[in-house]
Image (cartoon, rainbow, N blue to C red):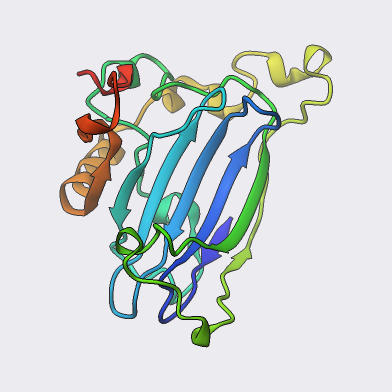
Length: 207
């Protein structure tokens, strides 16, 4: 999916692209692009829900203009983390934090008003005189398998697809260096660094 975000004063708006299963105890992988006042950078917020529980937000400023042209998701090919990359749990094979186990996910996109929290903690509200707020989605492609009948399909066969290959179990050296560069220069918020938020820190945050 390629996404072109709201131009100009986008304060209060959120452009979201996410994968989610259905049901109360759903799994979800989120990319949320948080708008800002003109001249200030967009933030990309990632989050993971596992069995209905989220609260795994990370926020990074973007190092390019996402309103100038359509951009690929995953931030122009540079990895954006969903959890603490120093965590031992993140490094155990394919386990990247708590991994959603529901095999069936749909893909959804939306643009919505979240001016109670999205821009500078809710201090800057949506200026409705600048409406409509338009984000563009294009180039949607799915490389997956249908899950209508997992038991009889090849979806359950380990190693059948490219995402099951050993090279996908982690980042290569180049991507790892890019990830460190992103965190060093653009990290704004990491739930693993917010010790006052949790009664007990999530296990993936314990290095």
